[in-house]
Length: 288
Image (spheres, rainbow, N blue to C red):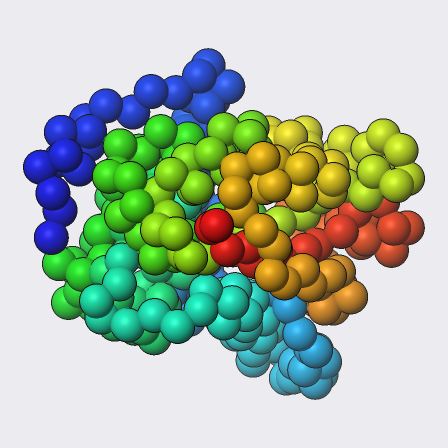
């Protein structure tokens, strides 16, 4: 159940001018690539996909091609969420977990169904919070999965309240030092933090042109790879697993580029991934 301390903070969402622009963007966002994929099974993700593509969808009859393609893209993004959850460690109904930057709530709902645990999703977008809470209500899990209008840098949740927390493609919207300090505060000793993120490869120097174009497209600030590990170490988060998912996500982008849901950024991602300047990583870390 939500504590009194939790409730007191619920109406207080301190944001910077930049974060306000991000919230405004997501409050207005109605991108088909986020909505139509979620309509497949009612799980709305806000991230990309991994895994081998069933390329036979492109040879489907014209009246079936788009439906099959959308289903395949959704299968790949669901595989990405499952892969993240695989790294959260052993969880059960007695545990509480947090999805930081929860979007429309897909990963939170999947986590609750898999582990039976309590889940709190956090977003600075009122539209996302309202949408996600409605999805939880429709699934009959509104008491178990709660979506909160809160800043992931200052959630107001009690210290040590969570056994696991994660960011799924949302770290590029905040300063990593502040973010990891909050995750470290929220996690119990021995708890697990996981993120999947795009980061630029600073072994190549400054961000490439393609990375800069991605920043502009999503109003974000992609961090260098080294910053993740430096700021984790500074905040008592010790990596236990690092997986380079770059090769696994390239097929998703190649398929998406051939769909009606393409947004024009697909070739930029492919350029950045294939030239080595951009990487797609999973990092799992224990709170020590």
